[in-house]
Image 1 (tube, rainbow, N blue to C red):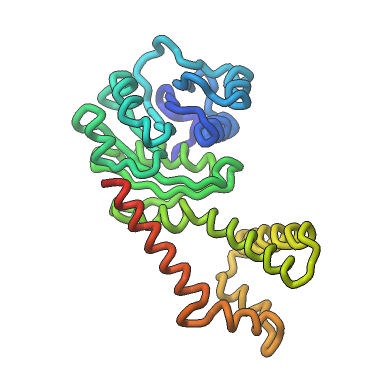
Image 2 (cartoon, rainbow, N blue to C red):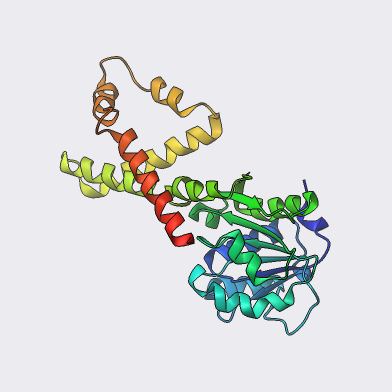
Amino acid sequence: MAILSDIPGRVLLVGAGKMGGAMLEGWIGLGLDPARAAVIDPGPPPEVAAMIEARGVALNPLNGGVPAVMLLAVKPQVAPDVLAKVAPLAGPGTLIVSVMAGRTLAFLEAAFAPGTAVVRSIPNTPAAIGRGVTVAVPNPAVTPEQMSIADALLRATGGVEWVEDEALIDVATAVSGSGPAYVFLLAEALAAAGAKAGLPADMADRLARATVAGAGELMVQTGIDPAQLRRNVTSPNGTTAAALAVLMDEAKGFGPLLAEAVDAAARRSRELAG
């Protein structure tokens, strides 16, 4: 596995919003020399701009040579205009890494010279605090060394999973990309249910947040299968069992409802990608 200090050349970040800024800070924290990083963004958020200045990273440099890696972190709707401007900066050996939702390998390949190495990836919002997970797919031009470099760059904000079939990116978008919203909705609904049952609304909110966060951390730290963790806290004929009898209803419970939701999100991801 590559380490960031060993990347043979400059890393050019295109787009320094919340996601791009978090990635840049993660790279530097993991050993990338700020002098070997550069950012193209006409107006980074104030906190990101301050970090760029404090770290001594070049912002919108007039030149600087062909980058070893160009990471695209702009909003997908502005991608055609942005890529038309930055594509000439790439050279034959430049690795293109995209974290843009809905922009396919074919779209990215068409913006650069034939044979350009391209990685398409989909991170999720916890990447902003270094607790994300990213699913990535390489095109055939990506070498093992470039794949290792892309993995190191993406791993700066959390875990990375690689797939060979680009179609799985749509499913990953529905599971991990959109997944944080499902968890936030769980906390929101749990708090609302607690308030409806009689708890003070602010207490119900605190309990729901702490419960969701604590349960997630328990899964991370123990590595125990979620189903086993569920069984561990479910006493026969107890309160949790009574609740799970509703949530695990085979026809209208949480399982079939979430399966329907993931299917809808994956379908929409395919539609947006064209």
